[in-house]
Amino acid sequence: MRDVAGEIDLRESPQRSVDCGGQMVRPIVKYGEPVLAKRATEVSEFDASLKALTDEMFEVMYAARGVGLAAPQIGVSKRIFVMDATAGQDPARKFVVVNPVIELGEGEQDGGEGCLSVPGFSFEIRRHEHVIVRGQDASGSEIKLDVTGLEARCVSHEIDHLNGQLLLSRLSPLKRDLTVRKIKKRIKAGEW
Image 1 (cartoon, rainbow, N blue to C red):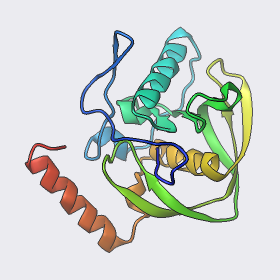
Image 2: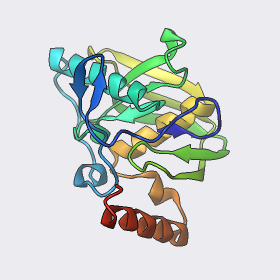
Image 3: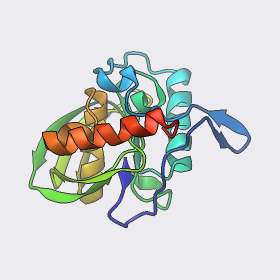
Image 4: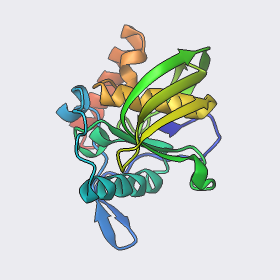
């Protein structure tokens, strides 16, 4: 997820693999890729490869200046997301959530929202103001997050990805169609 409300200065996602300290990491998958349109699979093995994947997800997210990233956004159809709405400033607010389930969503907030998989676009999206989500951390231990504001928006956005939905699905049919046309023009022009 890209924050467009001004809390963090975010830029468009990279167009290719990202160089993070000399190590190339996976590129962010963009709208149109099948992995973004299907429900991700549950994680059952909590091992070193999962830890490596979540570390890579944080690298990609930070390089793209995002606040959240779901595994399908780097082409991995697993129910995992990472989130840090503080841009690395508060390690206690850096989360890995595996197999997340929203237990509570209440209140409403309207705000600008972007997506690393739909670069260059942002939309006013209504989300819950307060979210409680349960899941597991990278080692398989049960966790529960009680979040508000930007973090609640981010949790909701990333879980949408895990369910095969992009923020475009939250737009009116007219706005969605106009946006898809713009994206198709960019694809045709080789700018996507």
